Length: 564
Image (cartoon, rainbow, N blue to C red; front, top):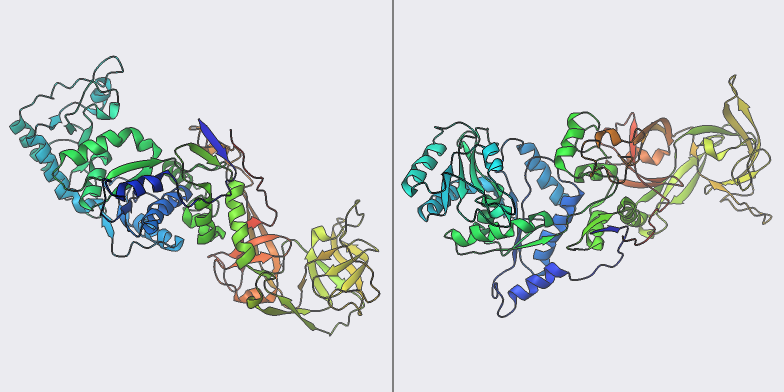
């Protein structure tokens, strides 16, 4: 059963993981008298995404709630796709989110020697053996619910297994020719327990260990050992590992290690119009569909950061969707809702004209320039005010003028009046078109007695529009982002997810005009462009050419809770 969540606006102080841990450390519990110790163990084979942010908030958050510890550990047991670039990006993302592992940073590869020693001990106990079946033969002999698995090498003598395993490490055998398997139960109803592979031969360069090893431990064997060696009390992981828990417990109970961590599973995060498989995200990058892992359309933490998401908005999102055992899909609009809430408080206001049209105030003196003060943030008086200039020639949005207005149109049209934000009331007197019939200039007269936008005779002005002064405005580019996928469920469409790309996921507007105060804008600094949306300065921006990314629209698409 799947639960489709648009929003659960309640943030509970506890959940089932919290309750389990609380019981475990209470008197009589399995960890009574011990410090709660969790870990976040990403594989450094790609950038972290919003699903990882949920896990980060749970792992570090639970440790914080119980005044405990949380380790950061790189799960680098599969060298094929791993790279130090990903290690550094993971560390940067976690710090940006506001979490700190202090001096508790580890690599799974730090324990390769110890894992090998534990494997030798398992062989000596008669709990592991070297199997010469190929991967295809193992699958063929796996059996089914009515038929047990088979391995003709299960009863190899202990001494022979020890010799073969040593020679596997020494590189005497070809990749894939042998594996070390646990001797558990070939007829188990849980196929993870049917003598799972513990080690495979893989001659691949390791980003940290180099070429020292040609055998690598499997995740289900390595992970519980890493947890046990680090003194982890609670191994919090996503729901797909629930069926692997018996194997996790088998490993920690069979190796000679005092710590016996408890694995607890929770439902991973799903968001519509998004994919969060690192394999699929990598394909988007490698195929050039996006500009990189930090493309603002990507659900990666670095992509969200570049788009203008704040750490607080993502933490609020993860907190408010809750922790559950039920697989859920969250509506993307709720993620935007959390960002909009945060930016509404934090973002300074500014005026930017994305599709400029020149407005000439014909009765305003050509050589006159006035200064006006505008509040930076109406929600925060401490942000102060800024000064902007006003002159005869301005830029307004093309959509703020209509030669033949439709019913309910309260912006500029011939004979109509509007308020120019914080300055004057103007009345449109006409427009100019080029040879193709496109409007290139709009003309108006200002009411000199309406400074501040208030009519001296008390008449009501229904429309207010933003503008920029053509004398000192800045030129630049705006990038407008939409959902990367057309379908709300691209993750399910395994073969077709690339074909589901939204061709309009990025629109680039050139020749935009910005108020002069944005000259001092900093990369990622949030702004609300009046009547348009929230934006931040992109890293590709220069002093000569400003580039702003749209983070989110002003209009809130959040519609409340919906389940199915």
